[in-house]
Length: 365
Image 1 (cartoon, one colour):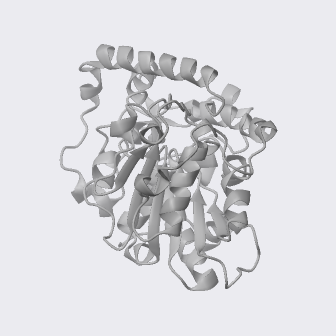
Image 2: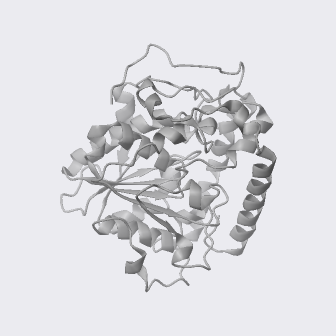
Image 3: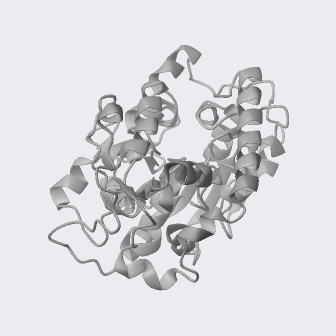
């Protein structure tokens, strides 16, 4: 992709004083996640966001796996109690990328961090890698792989876990209530220019793509649409274990989701539920997870809510110039007011049922 480094980021249609000092007091990063347009971060900044569980890769490792977190939590908060130690124990070389502002910023910028991390991860062993993302991590990862052709050639597996690939209907009532939205919220609107560009073309044919999600995910709804990736193996955990009801965070501890991730990484092609027919659905928590470790994710709630305090915009900020041609029907901000009451009711009902389901299931959060 052709990128231009700008002297300053683009602040199109930003609302004055959009940031909230009240929310800022609970965050690790300043509330300054502006829309960045064509801006490219310094290479040192991109490189500093990359890390691995072992300083030097074991040449005998199965493959290198890059983990990509979502909104409100860094890689350690998201994966240190689940996939990092689990995949280490399975013989993978495990790495991660920390997205700007704990994932609260412009997803097109996050995609640049992922693309750079892919190249660094590949350089460790010199073999194609797997990328596993959660929540807003998958769309950020897909953006990097869609628009950085070099990065795409270095990946042979992409696994989305509870990924907001096509946005979420829960965004719309929020933006209507505020009257404006942070860049990432606009981008997560189901009809956003970001979502359109992201899904305008599939990932490279050389990448095996799997989307694992839960029908009871209270954060990404409607899950069958929000997590759908064209040409991928799109698999709800309930296809294998109908009585399990993992939520948006709980899916990271869910054994069915984890086994699907492993199946994708360990075999050619995407995950295949047929290979897991003997899975014990009585096991909700995946091996190696101590339920007492789950509170490590609690601080992420404040960071997640802090997204509302980021600089806000009256409409979706412009995409980077290299992606604008992929938007077939640019989002009209007034479109959000059409049918919003119905979508709000549906979103609220889905959220309520998801929370109730979470309380009833040991692997749901």
